[in-house]
Amino acid sequence: MKIITEENKKKRVIALVGPTGIGKTKISIEVSKKINAEIVSADSIQVYIGMDIGTAKPTIEQRKEITHHMIDICPPDHIMTVAEFQRSARKCIDDISNRGKIPFLVGGSGLYIRSVIDDLHFADNIFNKRERDKLKNRIETEGLKSLYMELIKVDEEYSKKISPNDIRRIIRALEVYYTSCKKFSSFQKQWKERKSIYDLTLIGLNKNRDELYNDIEKRVDNMISSGLSDEVEGLIKKG
Image 1 (tube, rainbow, N blue to C red):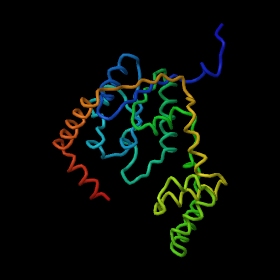
Image 2 (cartoon, one colour):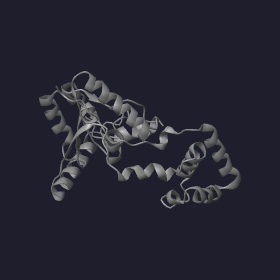
Image 3 (tube, one colour):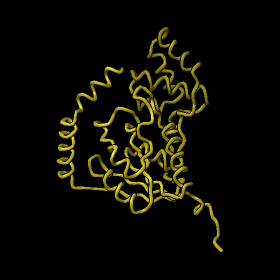
């Protein structure tokens, strides 16, 4: 008889990490074929429709070989927060796992990988449009410096990490504080701990720095010759 514990109730997830240009896409596709996996992209930009060349998005042919998730899921003008990314990626993992396949997380930035696999909570889940609008109006009447000084009083730790001219972050930190009575910096302290919510196998790729830089230069050249400038121009025209 198998004893069920919290540990073995966790869903199995494989995560592949490594620097840009090291070959994660090719490796993940080949491995997925052998282990009956589906790929969940942990790239924060590949979620956007139309950003194909500049993000080195897997091709249509590659996506036909192995099912990919978290690619082309929102328009370029949508702001995908880490919290939203976390929710969406975890839904994909649940769906893949419930169908008897292995979720294969491939990324991407460390922030987005950790947001998915670790037991992290984000201030992004705290939203108060009324408070935000009030803070924006106060900038018009009192000036940004006044709000920054206020941030120093309520969350000195976070105020030291941002510029006194960073309107977006100042407003956001104050919005979170006045909505939840929690300091914005308190959400960042979770990052010191690593506690996965999954039965995780983490694979890291590495390469000689000179070889990697050479590969990246070739990759950029290929992007340019493949129409990167036209892609960027098209996105700018769309606003």
